[in-house]
Image 1 (tube, rainbow, N blue to C red):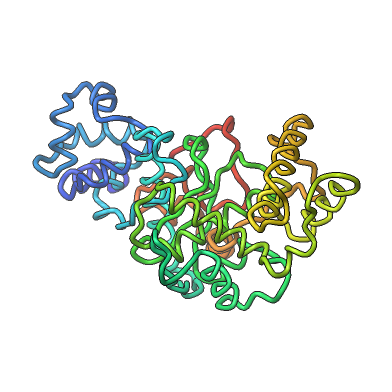
Image 2: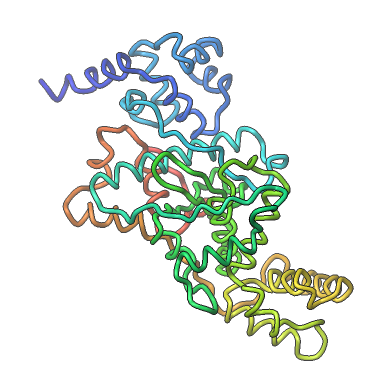
Length: 372
């Protein structure tokens, strides 16, 4: 009889301890506006607003409808307030629809919550990043100086950074691939109450560009605690940080070609493999350091476009750098006999989304995305 009562008991608890912030989180994770969700459960948008603000609480039947529509377990709504996070650093707020920003932000909260749960069961490295704030005027610190100090902080030897994802994870940063639903958003980063988080684009299947993305987001986490996310100045500073972090000027400048004549493309190809960066990044670096003039740079970019390399560059390495912090924690639990459903049972968090966040490889946009 106890087994038969459990669903009603779960609904009763979810209704009694209902937290409107978690309804907002579930709705945003589903990529829905309030009006759309209200229509799905045949209720008014005003009721949705009241539930999310905490002014009113839904009854058991409504909680059941909400759980079904949002593909979460009823207990998801009674799990306490979602983790607090800073506003994510998106590449371009103007080109990112608000609904997509909300979904990406909710996914960041989801990752923070999952990471916190895993950390209660498995030991994680201490979250430790240097604080090298760079203001828009750059009077006290520049992105290049911040990058050099960051390399020293992390103990990076002269030469290429061998594994960027592993480096940031060793410093306690959670690195995950995003869910396919927000694949239109490039990589982004955020600070949660416990750990910094970097979210990578699952369809950007390029080892060289991925490494630059991680370094770019690391720059935001180190330099931009108070900067307005998506601002042109902050984005340019993060690019400059990534360039210096991955390709220190003193080390790479003597080897960059001044034009793409003769054997320059072969030279660039070797530099690409050695430093683990794209041809586009190398060309931009050559121009930024004054090695290559504007005319030569424009001609090189035209050649890149003609060869189709702006979309897909040639390169020897096809596999991405893979996150391991959350995937390994998930594996440790599995080895101890704790499966995904058991681990998440009390939280009501969607199993399918957990599988995406704790995966070593990205989920393609055309794969089904089970939520529970």
